[in-house]
Picture 1 (cartoon, rainbow, N blue to C red):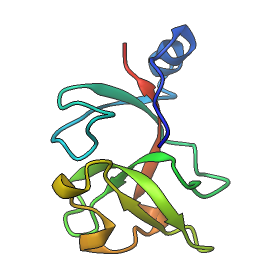
Picture 2: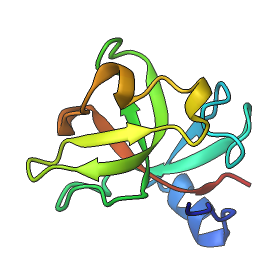
Picture 3: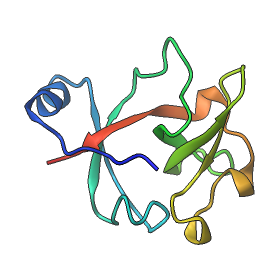
Picture 4: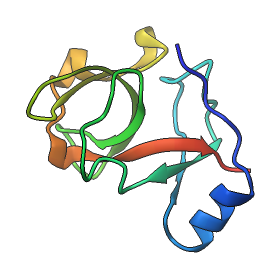
Length: 116
């Protein structure tokens, strides 16, 4: 399972230039990698040209509740760009095992680093 790096000066600069978005972790579905209350930086342009890769950490809108955003790990990707996603803490995660494949329009971006 891949790890996530801490942000560096370039990450903060990209955030200041609005090339990254901050996202606060809620819940325990990504334990032990991400703790509730931690913030990550998200590249909203990461998948404009190519779909997510297996193991990428992504932010998606819940297909069941589109106003609800989730951080999940990509398990599988179809040719049409849809992803099957899961939390790292499966017993505490609402993910593709519940709501199915996540279509590309629900994928908001790739997690690049922990924020500060």
